[in-house]
Structure formats: C-alpha cells, structure tokens
Length: 409
Image 1 (cartoon, one colour):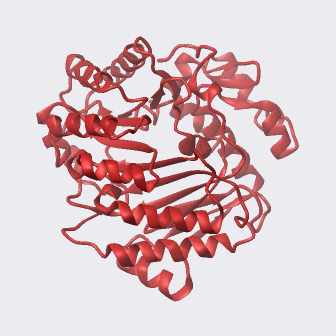
Image 2 (cartoon, rainbow, N blue to C red):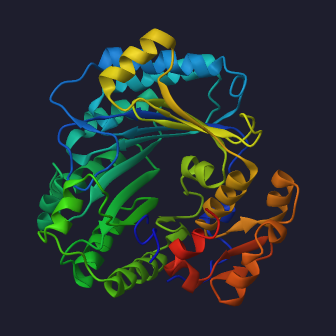
C-alpha cells in the first residue's frame, strides 16, 4: 500500500501537467510554523496545541529573530526567496498585521521578489471576508483551506470546528476578496465512507472553483486518538481495495474537471501547482522557523551532502530558546551521500514527472542506475516506467508507492 494513499491508480501524465509547466526557481523556501489551534483534531499529528489565547506579539518577534539568525548564516544569506509558507496549527488565528510584519522582515533580510508565492493555511471557521481582505492586503496571495469534508458526520468525526456551510462561505469570501490562488484540503478513506459520499465532497470542492485540491488518505498516526481508537475497535478503517477505488475515483473525477495530479496527493489547474511544496519534492533548500519547524540545506554539513534540523516543539520552550540563542534547533541530521541520493530519488518519484537522470548525475556525479541497480528490476516489474528525462512511477507503481520508495530509503 502506498503511503500516498496515506500521504497521500493512476494513468500516465499528459504533457501539460502542472508539474511540467510550473518550475521551481533555484532559491530557498521559507516555512513558518504557528502551532496554536482552537482545538486539537483527533487525527492530527502535526505540532499543534489547543489554546484559547496565545502570545501573538511575542511569537511573531521570535519568528523575526529566528529569520534574522538564518539571514546571517552563510548557507542562506543572500539567497533568492522562492516561496513563503505559513503552516500550523492554525495560522489564520493570527492578525493580518502579524503576517504583514513578518513579510516586511523577510523583505528586509533577503528581499521578496514581486509575485513570489506566499501561502497561509486557514481554518474555515476562523476567517470571514474582512480578515481575508486584510490578509490579501498584507501580502498573502495563496490560501490553503483545511476543509477536509463537506459531510457533517465526517466533520464531527474529524473534530473540525467548522460546518460545511462555513467552509463554503469562507472559500467564496476568499474569491470575493480577490484571491485567485486557492487550495482546498480534503481527506478520504474515512471509516464507513462510501464512494458516493466522497464523490459528493469532490463535487462540492470543485464547485467552489479552487485552483488546487489536495486529497489525502486518512492515516492513523501513532500518538493520536485516532490510532488509539483504531486499536480498541472504536474506528474501523476502510479496506485497501476501497482506498484504491477512492484514489482512482479522485483522479478520474478531478481530471475530468481540469485538475491534473502532479504529486501523489495533489491536483492543480495549469500553472497552479504549489511552488513551495514542489521545492520540498525537488530537494531544494528551505529555512524552517517556529515551534516544531524543520529546515533543510542540500549542500554542506559535516559530510558535504547537506543537513536538516528540527526546532523545539513546545511553544514556551521555543520562545525561550530563541530569546537565549536566536534559534531553537534541538536536532541536526547530517546526511551522507547514500542518504542524500536515496532521498532525492524518493522525493522526485512522488511527483508525476518523476526523477530526472541528468539532474541526479549532476548532483551526485554518477549515473542513477549505478547507484541503484534496483531501478532496472522495478522497471521490469512494471512499477517504474521510462520517461524522456528518467523514470517515474507507473500506474501500478503509484498504488504500491511505499514498496517502491523502500528501495531508496
């Protein structure tokens, strides 16, 4: 089973997929994590904390200080900013002025090119037209709405604070306020979910006219209430055959309405692929700031093959760490060549256009087939298929993505 039915079978990609028309400029992404939520959803394993109040001014000041630290780091100083992404948690709980202030600071530290993608994740229950208009005026140009479902019973199961009516109103208000780049997040393979219910979710999402739809298969992450409820029988997952049917329904339904799949779980209209996430999948550098954020630099490090870091997760400890030393890193992983090469292939294969053999050779100084002879075996078994640039998952390989990825990790 693919972790892409969980993290998201397919047909061969047409020549105008979003992946092929939306390129990632060489540069760095900036990810800013805001962990506060009004309530903690029982399926969520992201770093988030339920709160009725939060130290917004103090937290924004910490983000600014941490950004300044990385702007002085030779690995990131003077870099071209390719995207900015506010994730959570529920970033839309913060005031528009906070985002404006952070973007002004990024502009001061690195410069912020005109038209650069700036995304904020939003809970539909936390925004209305005035706030959305203010967010757009503050410099946000892409919204990602965590709708998850339009079915009342599944919204209740997932612990969402919004109703279907509120979700529709929020997306419509975003369009009225001038946003033209909108994503709707949905979750499928929910316990007891039927194809008809999922198709209705997709139909309602498409009716709102977003440029991008993310459709994630429900996963039962350890440490979450959902995982515990699965163990004690309170929740019964759908079967693997149902997951596959829902995945295939998703791709066929969205393609018929102008959305092409460009990554295992992501669909977009032409030129509307998420540039920030493309940076992740193309192994580009990104600065991660905020409680629990991760960052990545594909070059340098102890072994010369890049490194990634993780920040302190608890907000109060994060704030104290940044105040004391200007950053909140608590773990740094230095990659060796084998790890770096495997990650490059695995991440590239998540995308419909697959891994580029010439780019691999440029980065690692050797042909990909020499480092990974298993590619011939995977091609022979029909899990990978040859492209003009290299290899990608076949339709069958997409359904068995986890087993394919395991060969490179």
